[in-house]
Image (cartoon, rainbow, N blue to C red; front, side):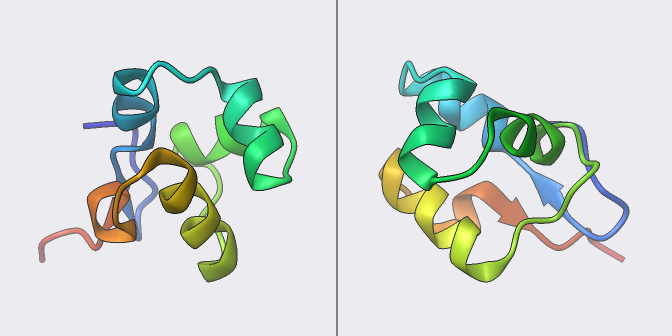
Length: 72
């Protein structure tokens, strides 16, 4: 599992790499900076709903595959 924000676990880096995309390619497709993708993957930034949906669509998966709430 990727590095996680305290309020969100994410698998973005793992899924992005599994489809053979670079951070730059994903950022261009989602219309954000590469630094934004990097910050999400490193658990520094939680994406908006719109951005999460764009990323999931680009990677061919569900938002729930990318991001999950931590188990309490």
